Amino acid sequence: MNHIQRSFQLLIPLLFTVLGTGAFAQTDSLHLSFQDAEKLFLQNNLNLLAQKYNVNATQALVQQAGLWDNPVLATDQNITDNSHRFFDHNGNNGQVFVQLSQLIQTAGKRGKQIRVAEDGAKIQQAAFDDLLRNLRYNLQLDFAQAANLIAQRQVYITEIKSATSLVNATDKAYQAGNTSLKDLVRLKALLFNLQNELVESERQLNDLQAELKTILAVKETQFIVPQINAAPTPAVLDATVLAEQAKNTRADYLVNQYTLAQNNDNLALQKALAKPDITMGASYDQNSSYVRHVFGLQLSVPLPLFNRNQGNIKSARLTAQSQEFVLKNNELQVKNDVYNAVQQYRLSQQLLSKNQTDFYERYDQIYNAMLKSFQQRQISLPEFVDFFDSYKETKIKILQLQLNLQKSIADLNYAVGINVIAVP
Image 1: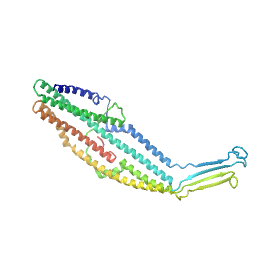
Image 2: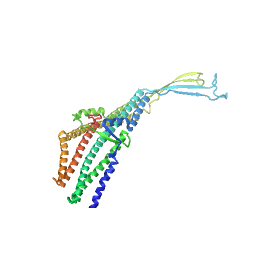
Image 3: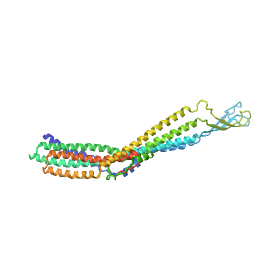
Image 4: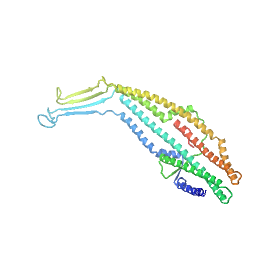
């Protein structure tokens, strides 16, 4: 037993030494509201910056699709002839042939190519918005959970402080022969469990800090302290209205919508490509035609006898039909996501009603009364330990309910695609 006592005595200062060199001792703390964090995220996030270049790249393709084909200049000249002179074109000597031709697209191909490229630009913009939506959702969850773990830390610190005082007092009483070793060991076991739970909570917080620093692109030495205000005023939500709104604001749905439009425009383009284009040109022939110095007009049209672009047309039609089902499935998903998010928000809001909040506040008063009663030996050690555990679990559950409310707000905003409820 003496070995057990010495182990506990060594563990307590060691634990606070370890924690003191970690998150507890962060001097480079960055206190941020969610609005401040969101500004940093929009300015610094590297994934967003990379995706923005993709948007600009597809917009450049719209310009490219509208450009005309370049005219073609061709020439044919003699190098030498029987005179053994090089490039001798004087007088009646030598031969010069010059041709200038231009491809003229028919059936509105250029306009259809522009529409396909414009659809591609819309898809990339929607993909950028969807990336923004996902990263903002991750930021909101990490932000809320980090705040939750920091609040949990304070609960553990308070309980560890109380438990440490009780262990020290009980140890003195044991040394004086006024209490049993069994009571001392049980209190030390309680303290040990609290310390283990605190260390595990710190591990989770460290992981979240790494994610937040990556999303916000801040220094790795900084410790982010989220500032979350009181819970927002309960909102009255109409799931049907929000589901319809989501079809205009959710970027993943818009990606599928724009993809369907692009597929239909591509089908129209493939049908147009079956129409032959015309090549027109003018030529000059100095000395090889039926007379000298012939100026000619040229016109060429491919005859669509074998290749009428049948395969590409069929492929484009089937791709468009497939995308219609993808879009319908996405629409069902959007509706279900919104309805589920609204229900989850209502449940979370109900669990944090004013009556329950008042109960949680009274529970702190009860804890102080129970601690005083135990110190005055008005209640037994088993009764106090049971209440001590119950108090800790209740405080953690309170924080979990607050986290669940924050998560339900994030889920709702994510499901609709806009901030239906602002983060407090």
